Image (cartoon, rainbow, N blue to C red; front, side, top):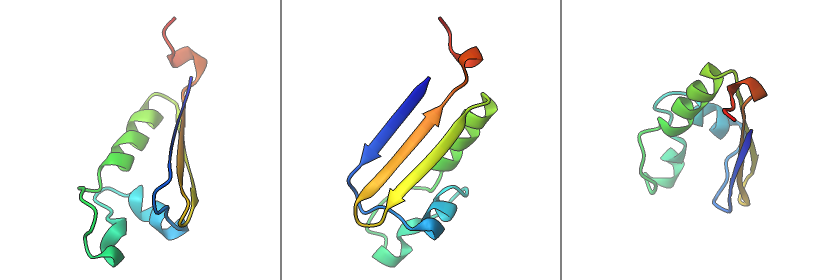
Amino acid sequence: MVFIVADNGIGMNEEGIRIALEPFGQVDEAMNGKYEGTGLGLPLTKQLVETHDGRLDVEIELGIGTIVTVEFPNERVLQ
């Protein structure tokens, strides 16, 4: 099972992805706190996906947007 979520937001650079995948990581410091959040969304999602033997992949294009792909193996999908 694969879930793909894409947006056309501001995107991130490679360092931003690293920060965003760390608990409480705040990528928007350079934007003066313009965006709200605790920095737990992606780290919790990644941990939950990996707990179920899945994979989370983040693709970015700075200024264009972000694509997050979550993939679970067949043995984790209920029929």
